[in-house]
Length: 269
Image 1 (tube, helix red, strand yellow):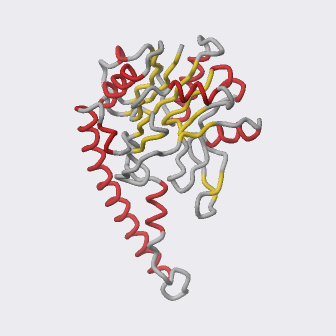
Image 2 (cartoon, helix red, strand yellow):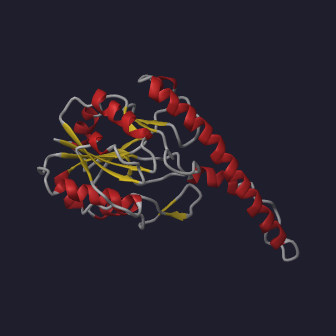
């Protein structure tokens, strides 16, 4: 059995989209366990089980995994899937091949200022292996980004567990030939699409690095440093808002295409 664990926040718009692509592209039996925070009533029937939970994304995923492991057989698969992500082809051949030699297979977003950790937009692991790893999607464990600065994010503690137990894992990397944004609207391993920021402000770490690169010279000078820093802070806020608005417009347009065309992704790969 395949158990899909997914989280939807504040909107039901992705529920039908995700379910349609799951049904279309996964031929094996599967059940979907979901957390629906802030989603209006009337959508629970789209899932096999809805698990109430609040708090951070990682905690919701951990709770879904615990509920699945309580009933799953050890060799059953847990597929973590962001609410705005779904398979665009049958992912099981890739998953089965990867799990023959590694602990799990997951998206790795190298394009996000060199993220090193498994990302829950798509991750497949057996229930046995998740429990052996003491799987935890929480941030905490740090790594260096592309500029040598320590960062952490969702999946950080899972990366720590994999490294601590010397457990190899298989990354699914971005395979876009057309990039509408350096991070969002990504196809991974030619089998999974992740819209990105489908439920939140559309600014990623890679965007923040670009904003930071525009800092004005003179920030460290005693006479004008404070003025320059205030100017840069105001400019950075404007740049973030502009970046989010631009990505938001593309995001809404892409979602409209997804809703009317199962083959939308072909323009990206």
